[in-house]
Each structure stands twice: as structure tokens, then as C-alpha cells.
Length: 95
Image 1 (cartoon, rainbow, N blue to C red):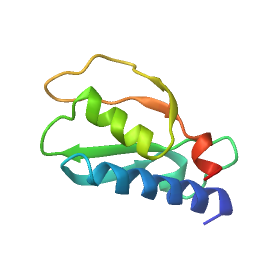
Image 2: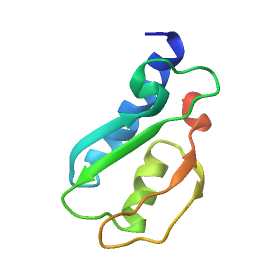
Image 3: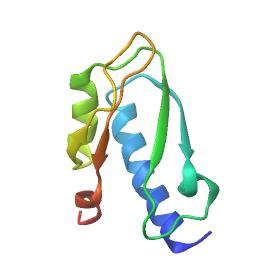
Image 4: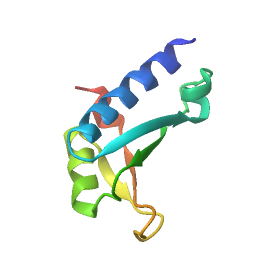
């Protein structure tokens, strides 16, 4: 495993920890290059949560703020089955 992968996995762990304190997470999946172990300096974090109940927009915002995420982007409206957002995590690196 390379340094970039280790770094992204540590950030994903911080997001997971913040999420489990605010949302009923049953399992998490780290996908993409960080999950495969071949991340590079251009890689992002593809992190999916399997939850008891679909989180509200407010709960998702709390998770983002807890890990110093900024610039949230919603790709879809919440449904009965899914809710989420993308955010810039580079500010997290400086903490």
C-alpha cells in the first residue's frame, strides 16, 4: 500500500468515526482507488455507508462539519433509499 492510500484511508476513518456518532451506520465501504490500495495524489475518497435509516440533510451536514469538510455538493435529492453529498476534504488535511 502506498502513502497516498494510507493517507486517504486515515481521512476515511475520520469521516466514518464522525458518521457513527451521528448516524446509525451498520457498515461502510471504501471504494475506488483508496479501497483498492492504489490511490495517487489526484485520488478522492469514495465512501459509502449502509445505515439503519436514511440520514437527514441536517445529519449529513453535521458529519461534514465534524470533519471540516467544505463546499458541499448534492448530486441528487434525498429519497426513501439514499441521501448523501460530496464535499471538499482538503481542509481536513490541515488539521
